Image 1: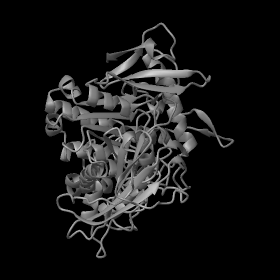
Image 2: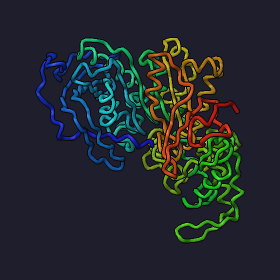
Image 3: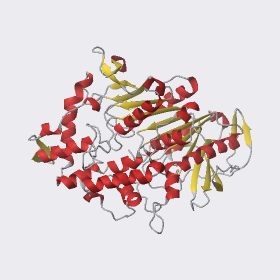
Image 4: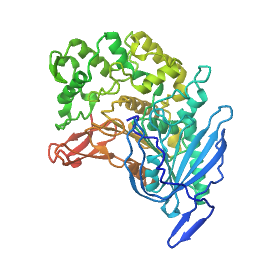
Length: 530
């Protein structure tokens, strides 16, 4: 989910220890003492401070930070050092924290650097992602972009005192701080160990996925490998388009319950489940599902003990939401959620999706009191166009020209769940197809950028479909060994408790059952172009 990454401090039990400035050798291990290092400022920035804190490792737990989920404890973490660099950009009146986590034993470092991404309006998570990466032998980094630690609340930074958009901080959040983090993170690793980073990777989902695409587009030399999942790209459009259900409810004066709405998804899955040759409760390729919501008119559904008859008005609302936003004259503006994706976030009556709600209130309208639940079709289209006009160049993150990234030898791996309930999956397809048209088609683009669409997977993971087992590992093999991933391994546990495996095909191919073999086994499917 967009809120899935928790921004949490490390346990208070992990107290800093004394800092020194040498590498101590004891037995077979060499331990780099945790201390502040001299840091070279990125272009256009100044270093305000450098702080170091040592941590003993072991099992690392994270405190609760509602409303976000609490990460599970991470075991067997080696001792590590956190170096926090605070930057400022002259004229921006900002203070940007970049946190770099490094294994203290140089032998535990693989020579790899991993920059980690954010979630919703959170630019980076200073907790579990960094510790996870350190355990895997990376030097890891995250940035707060100078916008704070809340994925939800932008009230403290979005607008200046005179009510204008705080453009320097928005630029930080959009892209500037990402490049700064790459520069600072590599420099700290060099100063800490005395040897340079050999391979640099980006790893992010949702906002973190968008950030990865921003790096490929704007700073193609920062990372050799970019893992950018469920990316919230096309932000200037996506962050308005996901208000569309509220507009439809308001204009059609129809306010269905979640129970009614989900009855349509249940029916769509039932109708399109078998299109891939297997009945598993999942729509494999929603593009091939053409079930019409009007087919449910007159059906009775049980909602909280009450029997409700599906009306034509509700069916019309559902079809409009699935079709995605259009202008009053019928021009398609953006995509809706796939059939089979839950309505619980984007289509709660009177509860607009918080990312879109904040975007329109603070950035487009510059009015925190603006009510996004009362938009008309015409006003919605005006706001959509205004967002494009004012912000595409800052945070659109949709430039299809990846020629510099390709020339630099970079590899970009992206996956997106077909049941994503927050960021419409077709936005990723739209971007990939524009890259194809500009850069020579599928085969040429596959040399450096591959997209995988995962059936039944929700935003950044979850859902009934098989989940990616090691997407970052697949990217590492591509970068370091030249082994391009033809498929992406995924697995889950079926309703009967048995393991289910799939080799997810790279776009535009889809998996089809061969007609023989265990339907739960990846070997029983083959990739084909529909």
